[in-house]
Length: 308
Image (cartoon, rainbow, N blue to C red; front, side, top):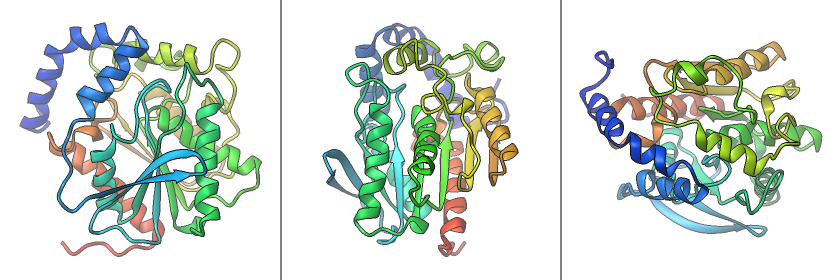
């Protein structure tokens, strides 16, 4: 199936296929999903030039992740995924270190409150509060990029919309990666077409939707940004893999944002599965996607590109 992809990617997908039954079993409960995120994704060691410093953003735990190339005045505010019910800065720390190196930004990854203990709009409130903390700390909005993967991609859109509503200065750009933007988990044929091909099962999305949005908020525009007014957003880079179950909603929100007048760069990566970026230490296509993010961010922030 993946003949055109790297041997490392082919081998990785074979290993994932062998673990499919375990992943499916673990995805039936919140506790199981949290275990998968911590054990399956969050155990990659950091490079020697990476530093991690804990931060308190007015009561919201976070951590600064810097690489040797990170500029002091440029911030990538990163919002982790995990279906709103799992994940942490520790889970995405190695991925964020690669983002820091590629974008030449220092990354601030926040530990927002999770459902079901803290349903909508807790995660959004924490994300907006962390952005306000950056502004209050003296960081220039023109030197801030915000982004996130999966649920973090949805939160990226929601945060931008909330900032517009509150008339806050917007960040320079935003990077939703494999964004989940429909709490009904019902948009597009990719939900069924790519089921069994994508690494991400559908049950965690449904669990997360029930835990975070409940029955009343599934179409709330700040829970499901697919149904929001997207006009006025900053430049967007949206990356999606063609084998994702969430592919169609990622493509659709890109189309709607462009229709609303936004500057949208859409990148579709052939054969890639949900948030393939996590596995940059394993196969090159993941690192290539991160480098593409870095190039785009540096262009928006007017950072110099490293010599070839």
